[in-house]
Image 1 (tube, helix red, strand yellow):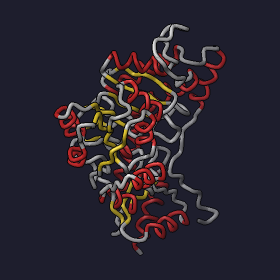
Image 2 (cartoon, one colour):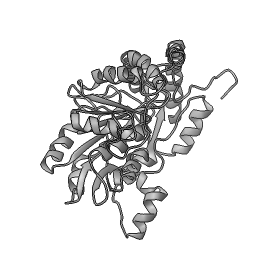
Image 3 (cartoon, rainbow, N blue to C red):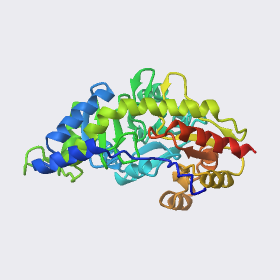
Image 4 (tube, rainbow, N blue to C red):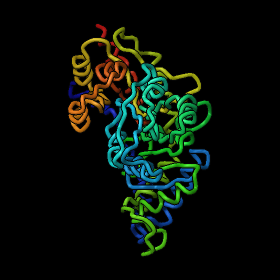
Length: 369
């Protein structure tokens, strides 16, 4: 990378004057935790998930964790999870004391394969956790159908998929619960935070108790809970970002379309979108057939940010690998292993200029020279 070439970052969180003004307004007002901004954010976010109940928490991981807790999933239960995801997906299952059962992914979408889920179901299976990876919705029509056949709960990990949809239904509106993250690099953020969505009013109330020490009224604890509340500062920032999400999403989709149309290096395979799916491109993830490390080094040299999500499948991470080895357990996940060895994510965020997109295309196509 020459001095004249600025790095095009793989992600660029937006913290503008509107976000700063919103945070300052809350700080000056004095209501800073679980107040009116949180309530307003929950109501406004509900518009993204067909009007479901929304419960704000302090992170996407907390959203996953509380969803399972609220459903009563725990020791003795199994939850089917893709291994090709961030570790938080499986960690939430372990945190409630349930067992993680890994299932393989579909090659095109990188999302949970319904056929693999079906094969993984046992009498102990209590839930399935599809991950809408990179912003592409999982095959929820097939997953919800098999969940109904086997009487399973469905916890959608939509932490990377704000405003994604399948056949017109938004992610977060399919399962027993949907979960979102508002980490700074997500398609919208609140600096840090999460949201659980559900059509079940009783589950929503249980989640509100669990996030607030088991209380709905102060000092009237009904159950054992924790402090997983969202701050009003975070919610105020999230409300600003929520208003901008539609425009940012269209820009991500347009950027992805441009890259797909113009990338022509023979060893680079562009992402595809399933029929009826709205892919919101949290990441623009290609496959590199060949020397991935060399390709990434050349992209970096050209000033193109890039990253691998995820180089090590969850089932090979130490907290999962070692117990499975001791138990003599082996996971046969060929598509997961193949994806982990081939994927590279390129910049697609709405901050890209046309010149940035052209630089990315030139650098990627240069890999074939």
